[in-house]
Every structure is written in structure tokens, then in C-alpha cells.
Length: 110
Length: 112
Image (tube, rainbow over all chains, first blue to last red; front, side):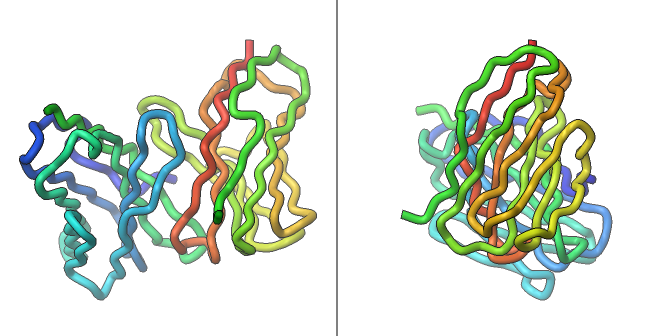
């Protein structure tokens, strides 16, 4: 069953701008992960944040987690055209399987 | 190179004709799973396997079968495909169920 829900569904920005997408979920989690999918291809893992962490960085990516609000955000700074993709959050609420959201479609125009 | 491979990548078939989509990983992962991706519905898990000979249903298992006879392989079997199984299918593997997932390139299946 899907637990994570990304917002917005679609986002269009220009190169150089920052992109922020959010993920809300319903039950307590052990960890939350973000994945990227280029059109029709396999998902690629970006970052994992555990329930006892509040913020994590990886290159131009910054992920925050607010367990009290049951939400996470993914910030991509200084976006590039190559960042155009769909972004999914995946929550671990069960300990044995991830639940993926429906994704945010990001378009970065030159 | 560490990877998950799927075959075929594209398949067009007719209703009722049994088919198998193969999945293989070379990372010695314990956990493997199958997902389908449909517009507006996101990724939904079909079946997963925590280890050899151990498989379990995901969220949408109806119409599918799997087997895990070897650690590296996890084929997906559609014994009598129907048009509502037209979808993009992904195999994934990981050290354990909720660890970082490594996805295959996908198999686009069309059932006429």
C-alpha cells in the first residue's frame, strides 16, 4: 500500500533555480528514501534519512525529515537540465518493504 | 559492474499466452522484488523474496507468480496475461527489504 505522497505532482523551473519537493506520510517510519527516475528508466537511489535524523546532505541535495509532521522535503540546489526527472519518496514503515509515492515530475529548462 | 538485469526489455504479447520476465542481480543481495508502474498509480509491489525459496505477496500479486530457486535470479511469471497487466515492470534487489534498492532497467509489457 502506498504511504508516501509527493507534492507537487509537477514542477517546472529554470536552470540555476532551486527545486523543492515534499513527501507526506501517514504512519511512523524507520527511514525514508528518495529516488530519481529518468523517463521510463529504473529508479536510482539518491539519499536515505533515518527517523532519528533531521537533515542530510549529498552534493546539491538536501533532505529534511520532520517526524512530528510526518513529512520530508528534498531540495535540489542550482538545478541543471540533467536534473529533469521524476522524484519518488519511499517509506519504511514495516521493516520488510518500502512503500513508494506517486512521484513529483521535475522539468528544468535551460 | 554491480547491476540488476531484466529481459526482455520490451514485449508485446496476446491475452492468455504465458510469459516469463527474467531478473538477475550480481550483488549477492538477499532481497529481491518486482514492481509495476502505471500512470497515476506510482510503483506498486507485486511480490518480494527475502531469501532463496522464500517469497511473499506484495500489494498487487493477482495474476503473477514468482520463484526464487537461486539467490541471483527472481523471474516473474504471467501464466495467462490479460490487458490489465499492460505496464512497466521493474525488478529490484537490496541487502534487505528496506535497504537501498537497486533497480533494473524495466520491462515494458503490452498485452493485446
